[in-house]
Length: 436
Image (tube, rainbow, N blue to C red; front, side, top):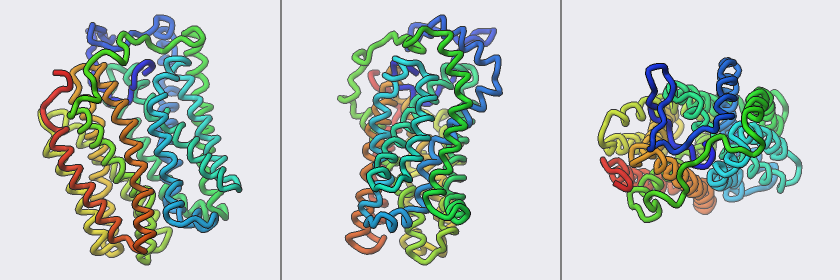
């Protein structure tokens, strides 16, 4: 949502008796009249709009998840050690954090639809550049992929809340489910695509086709939005500036929410970067390791759906935070004891815990804020610093793995992060409001 950071999960929007959203003094954004007319025209073609949302959401993790089962081949091709190889996952995370900061500014200047379309084009370009022969192209492509995903991450929830205020919950469920589905399919098919196309480059570049199709489907939305708003006019006009409201940098509660978001993201992206490698290093077939990883990703949908629903019905979410951290800790402990024999069990525990932790982190951005404006600012803070913190994980654990020659110490360090997640959840899950 232009002018603010719209990543905060949608809350149930109030509406009048005829279903139109109510706007009061607490609302942060006032739609421009010309764009409101464009939105109505867009919704006269709901199937096309829904298709655009689903296709964009499918792209929000696919380009990242498909790398993990092929990380060994990529490292061998370029002669990278474990630390340098982890940059393939780290660089996108860094640019996801940086892109989360600038996304609202870009949308405020050019409009949400135009930036979303541009993000899909940029994603397609990044996927293609990533498989070019020079090593520098690999890292440059990773940066483009991360930046484009950041724009989609931040703007898609805001678009849903803006255009479907009375159906925010089911639309958010559709978008988040499609996002996880894209990651699952990508992880499960990366090795079969490599075998079918003859190279890891062919497997990775194939996901550029999905991004290109999604960009084409978004063209009608861009055209109609540009007709309804003058060139450069924001999709909405902010009533508040970022200087108003409580100082989040001075709020311990804001930092607890931010670090909870960052810690759970660190565990998630360490799994994306290294979980299949952990299995193959212990003797599992590469294709089976990809399937186990895809199974874990698929089960994230269960946690990301159930946990936020429960969190919204509770005044305090401390028990939920402890439970999702415990599930991930049990999975890490299992990887230490029987990484291959219990692989499917550990993958299930890790997937449910990761999905629940992500859903809880996004939900607490709203529950801990005293008003919508603070929720948007808190979401921007948590997304930016959270992804930058998460970027440390794959690189650091890759370096520890390289230094020790095994996975015992890296996985033990993940157990420490799980313990920290419990403490952060106990703080962030209190019945408090920032600025109250």
